[in-house]
Image 1 (cartoon, rainbow, N blue to C red):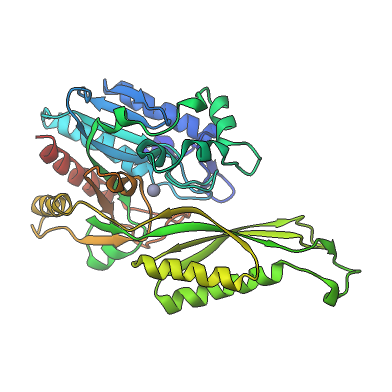
Image 2: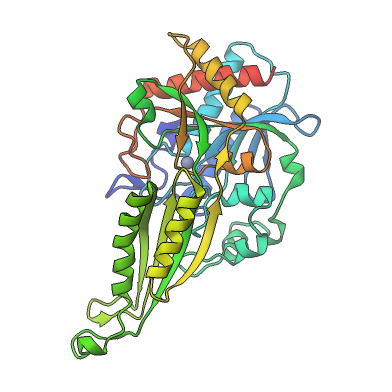
Length: 394
Ligand SMILES: [Zn+2]
């Protein structure tokens, strides 16, 4: 299945993937998902927020067990972040059928919309809207680099923007959620284990810093007459690194927009996006406050903030024990924290018992074309997921 997806949204000059939400690539991936659901005779539903659900059994009678992930990517991302969880969900379902398992509860495969936030800057839009933590009015007004709003983009994709928002009917169908994901670190590689279970998701957020100055000629404007916003921007970037190291968190400025953006002009405006995460909320928020103060009058706006998410402990321990018991040594699978946000974290925060299964990533590299998981480890992930689903659906 990953091979079938390999060409979609691929940038041949870098081998990276560009699969923005609601782009042509995303629409093709959504079609593929519908096709896989149809092949298996699953009942496909698209909820009010564009999330896709393929059901084996009817969840309107009794909440089901759901597994899946997302198909969109960061820009220049890898092949595994997201798609591995979706294809493993279908593969685990196939494995259960091969084994002649008939689940006692409905089993669903989910594909969440716009998990990465590559286009509109806010991650997990599909699950945040579903659970009501993202205001529909705010979501519809988000703009992409072309100046199109989410409302424009949804309309063009044939959806009614007025539909989006908290969806209790859909939420009621989800009794539990298990998301399989490629690990975005080297925790499993270090422990020599192909599969592990998530403990918690670090608190994380994105902030936009707008540094304002005065655009001017790069040749004729004397240095002392300039109001150049690039200088405080540069100071904040360097300070972010230093402060993050000092506070034991991570901070990244990965996106910047310079206006007017001419090589021969002093900029008038520099907009930069800070992503900050860490084990303790206080440390992350203090870091942002420190940088805002250093930014010399920069306008700082919070684009997203997700508090720490501890996954359901009994569910987590049960998964680790089950996966361990089915493995060679029989010891429980490793339990690891993660600095990456996921739809499973959004659902967990909304009170849905949720868990994550990680598949080893030999280099730990993610959000990059170099992201990788060995085939044997992906197969171990599918087997682990099938074991877990069989138990939860009993
Ligand atoms: Zn992901």
